[in-house]
Image (spheres, rainbow, N blue to C red):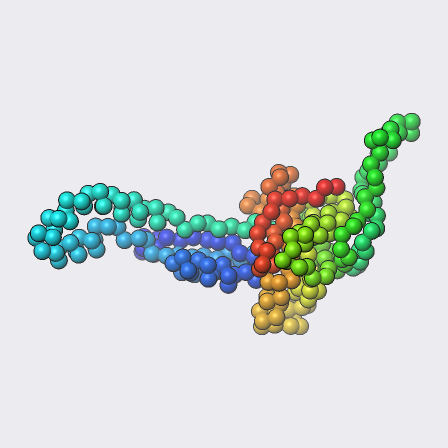
Length: 290
């Protein structure tokens, strides 16, 4: 194909709602957007740019326009310069990056009843006792652990999308109050919420979305997205929900799913938080302690 010889191609992943930022970033680097494929959680952006012109063609044409004496002076140092520029051209054709955001998944689902979580309440942890344990084998007082008590901010589980992805994870949509992104302590608060949800689930293999605007949940939860789009339409999503997501979709935790391989995983890399709000964007490898 002619384009394959003329252009260098690259694909980039972007979280939904962040496409414009990612497109502008790569256009500033000289990339041209060819097309994009929008998924449930992420969009694949396909870019291209012209392969760099090798030194010989344009440089030789310019060289021939010089008078004879100038050609001789230029020729003395030409060999080293040619090598340097050719290397620079090769490097430029290779660089350009392959930015990736960690992939998370969402698929078919159901909704459970919304529940509110106040601060300072105790959450029972699943599977903490063994039916086969001997009644006489009680642990010594020095080894007895304190019961788990939640001390984070108040939050509400609005919906739960069940059996998401081939990892069969439950996806919690959590609403809480606004965070002050200028203070580093907000990350600890978000992690406290995620940890508490993991205690509820009885596993760190779970998906938790933390938002500070309930309309984002209505527009994004697998259980409500169809009815929301039927009622509001894509124009409303683009003009109202997308701007809200840039400030109020705080974070997404995915545990037990390898986004690169799109499959379940127990590896440490399969547990991470994507910080989604514009001011705090980034990915952090982390898992809650149960």
